[in-house]
Length: 450
Image 1 (cartoon, rainbow, N blue to C red):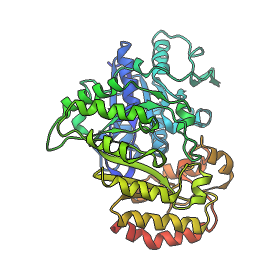
Image 2 (cartoon, rainbow, N blue to C red; image 1 turned 90 degrees about the horizontal axis):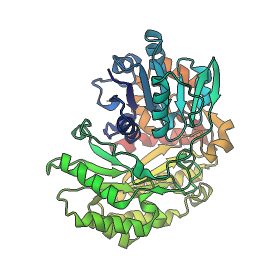
Image 3 (cartoon, one colour; image 1 turned 45 degrees about the vertical axis):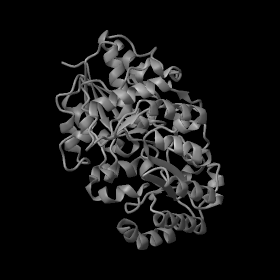
């Protein structure tokens, strides 16, 4: 019998692209390092046609250990909670621990409104989860464990927040032999944690800190080499994705990484990362391309310079157009992400974003259009949370629309009842909101067909 079940609920909606859940895998690896038996489960790999059905989630958690650790994103939190209520009803002695970015900023509210949750981990959980297991296995107290919220004698206790892990080398590699890498379309990796950028709509600095804690380049390269040896297949080699924002943050370090990777001469290697418009140039693009980078993702966000200034992006729409089109010379796939629905966005700002969307399409850029998600730990949420709204037709992200009919009514009722917990399903009221939505209805069919 396993000591703990770690269950991951990182689900990308309509994209259907399977990527290993790094956070839960790091938790799993650290628990195993400390001698615990871990039953790791990834809901992406569950055999079901409807991931939103509560009974399917409950089925996924059948035969779990007496301690269940759940990691979830914001977009799946409501469904997980409904399933865990049923699990706790069937097995009242099980200890349920929540964590992940989906619970960030709402830990106390979750314990207050959902009595079947026992513990919630705040922030990075690798150290806390081991201490929790130590305490539970010895029937000790949770009182001294930093970075958790829990119940004690019916009352909610909030322990001091733990510091961030400064040396990421202390973490064991997330992919041991028990993880079937061939089950995934892309292989995620971490180059560092934290972010010093000031984007007002992003919660990464609040969750992982403003100081960037870089991993050592040789460790990253060795991990890529290890992964590559396990999955190398010239006909189907999944792309290695450095999914954090930190790789591009240090130019000298990035060039060294590209040089170190190129020296390995790995045939068929493909890797991708997030770019930053105001930090990219031809020399970087060329070095990245020669070392195997085949996909780069840019968060452009808006076609309006006024909006770009207000959200602190640090570049203009002209700069974005220039860098992104230039990137096509070096990378087979260039992705540009745009956001609409900022609370201070005029209809003219919105139109500039739509025009930029179609400009990128004409340049054969893979362009995405999202409605702004009001993440609770962001500056923009703190300033405009009084302007939250809900629409069954337009959730916070357009990628949800294709799955909206599959969402159980019980989950929608929960989302409507607790907007301060499930704000990710909401939007901000903004000028000419109805006009924007009517405009989108007219062009949405064209967007999907292009």
